[in-house]
Amino acid sequence: MLLTIDIGNTSIAFGVYKGKELAAHFRMGTLKDRGVDEYTVFLRCLLSSKGISLDDIKDGIISCVVPPLLETMKEVCKGCFGMTPLVVGEDIDAGMPVLYDNPREVGADRIVNAVAGYEKYRQALIIIDFGTATTFDCVSQKGEYLGGAISPGIAISAEALFQRTSKLPKVDISRPQTAIGKNTVASMQSGLFFGYVSLVEGMVKRIKDEMKSSPLVIATGGLAGLISHETEVIEHVEPFLTLEGLRLIYGRHRV
Image (cartoon, rainbow, N blue to C red):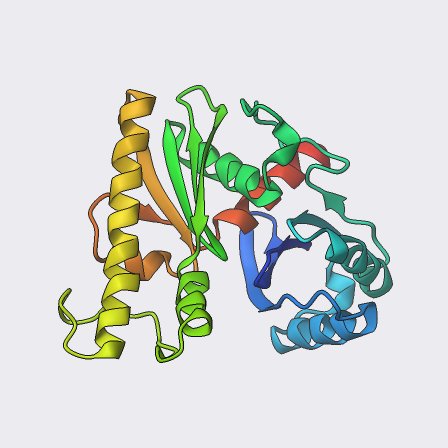
């Protein structure tokens, strides 16, 4: 079995693949000061809860946008499974041309998403990832990573409203009944939810105009399902896009 690990700013996503099948998936919160022993305990428990033995894991691959945790997770893999995982961008190339001014600046997860999206759809794409940041990544008809856009994630914006104002409360991110809120909570939810829907629609229009084509728009990340129900510009939701991209990149480097 292959262990895929996507280390993000808010959470770490794990996938366990048996061949091309995603046999199990789970996530834990990202804590930079958590040590190897703590992550090891969490990972052992999570695998056990899915009925997976440590001996079942034969190899691994990691994408990481939190550099302090990369060495930690590599040590966890070595201690738990006796293997050294591949690392996207560190010792392997994703296999996609990156037309960025400095390709090293692009987050590994964004390239992994682009690889997975293009492999599945084989056409020009706009990939929206609703993570800690909301990212828009563009792939050409020829399978080139063109670049994209980065905006604050919905959760970051909600937290900023709470922390930087004296009277506004914390709110859940959910769809309010109307755009015109009749109380503070509903007003905040409207601004967050409908505001981000409009952000998505506006950015997709601008990007399509610049790409001078009709790229397919797909979404991934925790809030992809919620936002996609409110707008027609998102054509497909792919909840495991990053994990699938890691599996594909692994397959190109180790057989």
